[in-house]
Image (tube, rainbow, N blue to C red; front, top):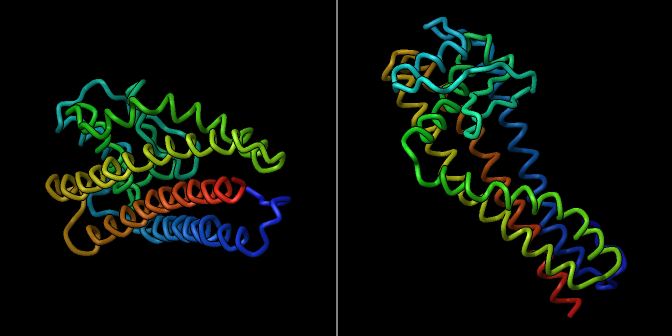
Length: 236
């Protein structure tokens, strides 16, 4: 969002820096932390010597979940669980690698499958709001462009509502992701897939770094929302 043409001087730029610029830096830092943790612990072979895919299947079997497919995806760090198709998608570096990082990520995504099987409430809420979130995300660029470039206050207000929807989604996402990581850390040690000590510490490092990205995403959406609200207030 680029605030040309509003004529509000340093105030609008100050708001942009505080509410958008700083969250953007936090997001980049979080991504850097994830990539760094994955590279470090991706080079450490787990003593169990099983790949991420094997780890996911073992956890699913132990949880008596037999209707989830574990598949490989080519997206780097594009690991995710799709509850609509019941597919657990693992990136190649996780799917085929017996590293501490791979086991942590695979167990985390399997944690979402367990949440789904147990009807974990926040996951159900997130699934319910996904269609509205996707619609808002697609609408938002046009709304922001029209509102900020052409100074249409009604579009700015619509953008605020879109960001409110995204903020709710990100807020619900936090407990979903934190719970999946909690389950992963416990299950990996209970099943003996990772050993206490350095391996367990490596899993914590990877998953804690990943958690920062969700916190950063929430902060970024909140910052954008507050920025649009400040633009609307100044416009009024």
